[in-house]
Amino acid sequence: MSEQNPSAQPNDTSSRVDPESSPLQTDHTTEPGSQSVSIDALQQRITELELGLKDQTLRSQAEIQNIQRRCERDVSQAHKFALEKFAGELLAVIDNLERALAASNPDDEATRSLRDGIVLTHKLFADALRKFQVEAIDPVGEPFNPEVHQAVSTQPSNQSEPNTVLNVYQKGYLLNGRLLRPAIVVVSSAG
Image 1 (cartoon, rainbow, N blue to C red):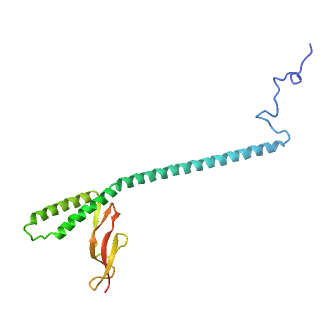
Image 2 (cartoon, rainbow, N blue to C red):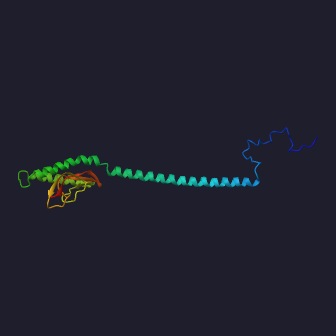
Image 3 (cartoon, rainbow, N blue to C red):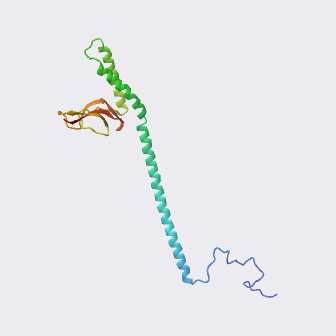
C-alpha cells in the first residue's frame, strides 16, 4: 500500500471547496493590509447604517407623536363644536322671543302675563345656550370689529367716535369662542 498524502487526493471531490461559491472567499490577489482596510470600511458602513436607523427611528417616533396630538386635537374640536349646527338653528328661536319682547308693551295689563311668560321662556332659553358655551354678542357702544360684526349701514353721529357700533339689528353668537353668527350692526361715521 502506498502512503497517501491527504492534501494530494485528485479524485476526492467531497472535501474540495469551490472558490467561487464559498461565502468566506478571500481575494488572494490583494495585499494582506488591504483586507483590514476593507474590514474598517465595513465597520464604518455598519456604524453609518446604525446611525441612519436610529435617526429614522427617532423621526418615526416623532411622526407618531404628531399624529397622536393631531388626532387628540381633532377629537377635542369635534366634541367642542358638535353642537354648532344645532345651536345655529336654535338662534332663530331666541331671536323671535326677543322680537316678541320688543313688540309687547310692559305696561299693558291685558298682555302682562303673556309678556311675563315670554320673559321667563327667554331667560330659560338663554341660560340653556350659556350652559353649552353659546354666548351672545351685543356690541352696542363698542368699536366695530369685522371679525364678529357685520355692518349693514353707517350713520353719522356726533355723540360716538367713528366706527363705533350704534345699533344692533341682530345679536351675534359665539360657540366656545368660535363665531357662530356675526352681529348685524349699524356703525357710526364721522358726522
